[in-house]
Image 1 (cartoon, rainbow, N blue to C red):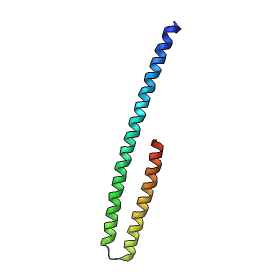
Image 2: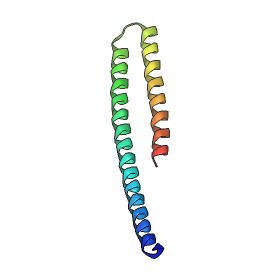
Image 3: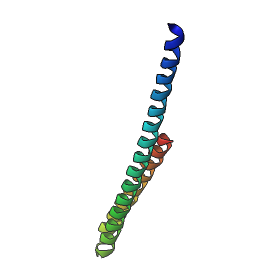
Image 4: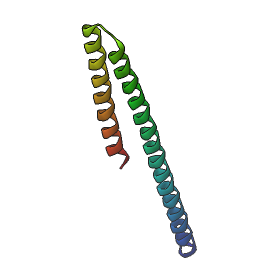
Amino acid sequence: MTDTTTPKIDTAFDQVKELNDQFLATARKAGNLYLDAYEKAVDRTVDLELKLAGMTKQEWLHSIIEAQADVTREVATSYTSVARTLLK
């Protein structure tokens, strides 16, 4: 009886492994698509902040807004870099 059940178990194991591999590949792809969208959103936000900074006549406010834009960009870059490394 073990001679016939062993191939069935091996086949089932291979199928589960293949499905798991497909799931992981799809999850990685979805994660990268999310990060692409996140990066675009951050870029748009930073662009908007910089436009706002350019419109203000107060130098101190201009500096604060630019600093915020720099921090936003740095944090987002760090986040996406680490996330992409984990998705590999």
